[in-house]
Image (tube, rainbow, N blue to C red; front, side, top):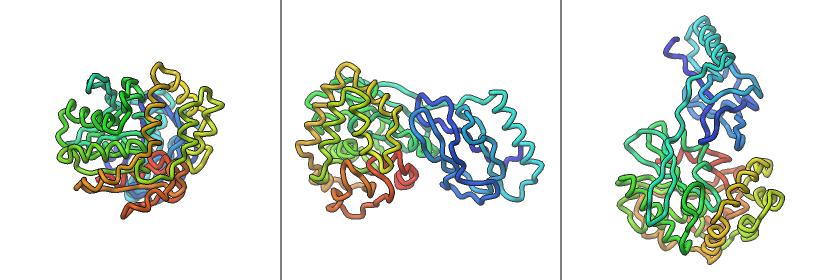
Length: 359
């Protein structure tokens, strides 16, 4: 195949994703494509996200049809310069189509998962990429490492990217101790030490944003930069009803209305998401962990004095339509980048913005 022809493949967004569907092609054959342009909307087993181009050229062929199941790694489109002969494109398209029809698609390696022991607790993580620079992604309250599914893969193109489960979340130990910010910051710093990472870019969402600020204030030499996505701890305007509702919900029916507050488009709070979260909430120890961490969030939490001690590049993103930690909380922060059309889950609603600002 002509080396100038770039395959656009079904991405692996998350540990459990084996296939996906194109629900809509945003770009059309013949369109000029730039790096980062949206190509298609992809429906995974978790959520629908936008696939962005990582190559430049012309969208020469669309291979996968709308609503066609495509295994991870399967070629769904071809991008190439206009000067690549049409017969070369046609041959590559026939080969890609044959691979989809036969199922003979090369397996795409996903993140490498593992655990480390920190302070008597097991911390789970998923790592992608092999670059010399390290990025650590820290989720928010009730989330886990999979919440970075749209961000981790593009960030890993030139860096080693670790998505961490905080104590009480995901596959980590459910013991959160006193649930304080210090305890959670200890977990992040302990993870860096256990993985022998001397310095890392820390990216934190919501509660995770407050955690990475505390970690940076504690050991600034280990932090190359902070990227804070709708971080907790910067104001008193907080949707306590959402937090309490999430913590106390005992069924999908009780939980789902609260999840709608997470997204600018409530339709993104799917039944599947509610089911996954209820499975997590029913694990032994989770109820106690969430209630303990809820106290930390509602105490109230103020990390502004900690951030003032940090002398590293800091970038703050905030969804303009955030209904959990409204954008008014950002008033005291300089240079905040507001993301139009996004709610609290900026990294799921507008992942390209997050990828763009991480140094």
